[in-house]
Length: 118
Ligand SMILES: CC(C)(COP(=O)(O)OP(=O)(O)OC[C@H]1O[C@@H](n2cnc3c(N)ncnc32)[C@H](O)[C@@H]1OP(=O)(O)O)[C@@H](O)C(=O)NCCC(=O)NCCS
Image (cartoon, rainbow, N blue to C red):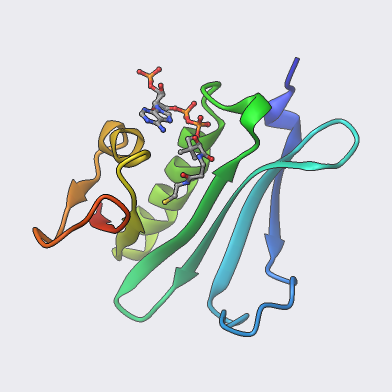
């Protein structure tokens, strides 16, 4: 069983990935009992928007609400800062984002690149 509320981490973004600015990037994640990461969201608090760049849930833990909880946490930051959330998603995940209130922000999209916002 996943004791998700006990496994909620907020951490500074420390993984060296040169294309992300560490001063604006935040990561939220869930871990299992052994400390392995099972779900995470990466987002960037920019001047005018919050850019959600990655969200991922380990296949064994999908459809249990973890992805929604991570997005809702970013939505809390959005409310607190007054900045909209933007992201680019794909056809396979668009309904997940629709359920969380996101809308398509650009009519010019393909199955693999759909711009959305909240
Ligand atoms: C998309 C993803 C993050 C969803 O995480 P999750 O923890 O499984 O999502 P939740 O359990 O919070 O699901 C919330 C709702 O969205 C639905 N949902 C989840 N993933 C879905 C998908 N891929 N397509 C359609 N609906 C989906 C769930 O059924 C659930 O609906 P319900 O409330 O009616 O039961 C996860 O499937 C994933 O990591 N996918 C691979 C990486 C990816 O595609 N990331 C998005 C790139 S932008």
